[in-house]
Image (cartoon, rainbow, N blue to C red; front, side, top):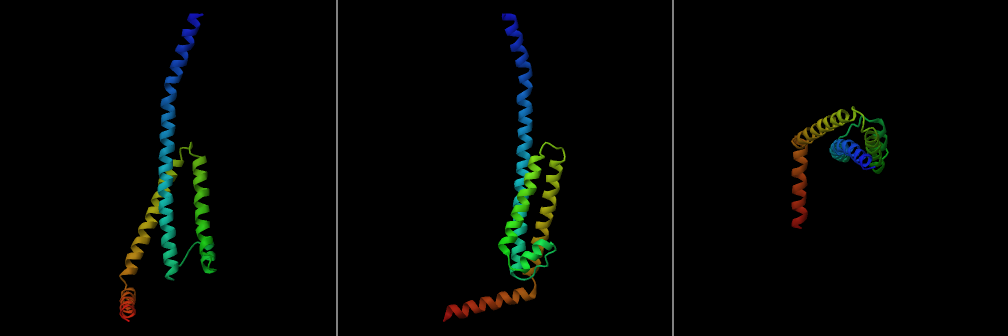
Length: 151
């Protein structure tokens, strides 16, 4: 009986020695995917903020037909809900398929695309801020504030 007990312990010890390493690796992969999805979410929110900014100054030519229909009818809150819902659905699909070897490259691709889009938006805003019309409007607004404040 002692021999059987020691054999069971040895067998249990050998198989469980590999289990923590495997669980550690899976947890590390899950954490990595979560971090990448978090970065994509932040970049997606940056895109949403720039979209709303460009729409508010009436300089937006939205290419997404669904988003364009929301913006053209004045449903800005619906656009925000739509973007957040699509982001949540996409993240849920990626999270459910996180064991697939394609999920991490997909996350990297999403990060690259949204980062590129954020850079394009940033350059557009910088270019917009340096146009003569915008500078003239800023001077007029500043002068108007001085006049209003002086009275």
